[in-house]
Image 1: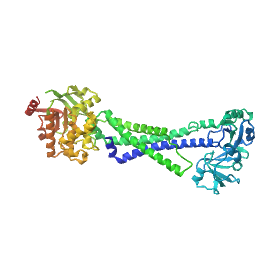
Image 2 (image 1 turned 135 degrees about the horizontal axis):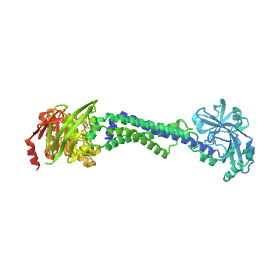
Image 3 (image 1 turned 180 degrees about the horizontal axis):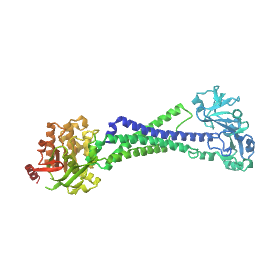
Image 4 (image 1 turned 90 degrees about the horizontal axis):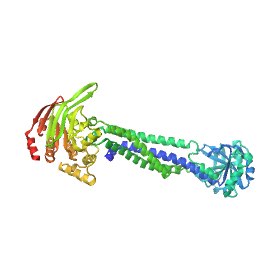
Length: 363
Length: 240
């Protein structure tokens, strides 16, 4: 009966299934993209090769920007026992071509953190207005060595294309970025390499013990990475929750409307079932099963949409991806089932409580 | 024969806007097991209301309805539904088949509601009933693909597939031509004879009423005449 009913109105079935699919896709894409961005950010931080971050007081967890610290701290930090190198990095956030960060780096000290960039094309900075881009950024923007690109309203020459995973996707000389930002001798953060990574915690304590650096934030990269979760990124969880709520609302409302119109249209059939002795529970069960079947079809279609969307995103935007986890596939499916069952619940109760005689005489 | 159905001083008052309409005014009716009773009367005399009350689709305003020893008018909605499911089959003038389902599907849903049989056994049983009714070739046809006569025969099969004690037929030939009407009436008689099924048939057609053992005439919500047909005695005796 349930299959016969959903086949009876193919367009309504199609719309309901697509709405649930949109719900599932929306949930998985929102969570998948934000999670991927967080994981990717953490991986790139790890790829820098530093053991410790030295940051200004009250620094944000992810989006370090501005130039609040003097580069002269480099000498202070490198005098600390156990510190191999302290690399100042000036970070500028840009919205050009999407939200991203530009690292102003002192190439020798930055390279000393991890052994240097892996140049896929070209080589290091030669001029003040040279820029290094990673391979994903280059592919995304179809860049080649020697191309001119706009960085902070200035023309830069792409001098090299490096393997991704070393902090930012775009790097310019530290002095150039300081000039452009009007922040001479300033930096956003110091990445510190310990002589012995096993002594990182001890080095952190030694830096914290320096009176003039007392107010600054010193944190090991290991601890920093452990702090990068959705919960610690401001408003991210709220954003995800709101998007999930909206997605579920779409699924709920469409299933509700679909089942409501269904039971109105099938008033007479409900009367027939009652005349055959169908209990209220039987009718509630039949309507909910129908809602559930629509939801399951929607979930399957939604999973298909999600993987298709992921493919389109990764193909067209190499710097972006979607992290689809089994846990979230299960959660998104359960949310869709919940929304679908809730959407079908009131119509099913309404159908079950119909007067059989009135239902039988319904035209 | 035991009394399978009995009403005692049943009244039914409908509220139509601000006016109370007295549809039934103290109906006392008895039907024995295996009896075929026709209830005749003009439109609006309350015969359909009486049939709905007998089938537990609604409750009387006052009075009692006893089905197979149970006072259904005192039961909860759920309990009345169970009695309807287990004891009663309905046949309507408008056939009332589920339009999205095939003939076989309509029978199977009745069995499913009744909780009677499942799977291959259920399928075999449905096919058997349709074969007896000469509808084997219509197994996979939906109501709109069948003639009125065929639809009513499927409706009849659905009403009796779970072997209810009582069959309530509301103008079952009202939408049929004379040939199909005769066919349906013949089937009702056969069901009554072979399975000692009590049949309460509502009609305003004297020719249809003539097939019953007993005729009850209604007017203005009352029973005005009870004609005892001698043929029932013969039928009754044949059961013994």
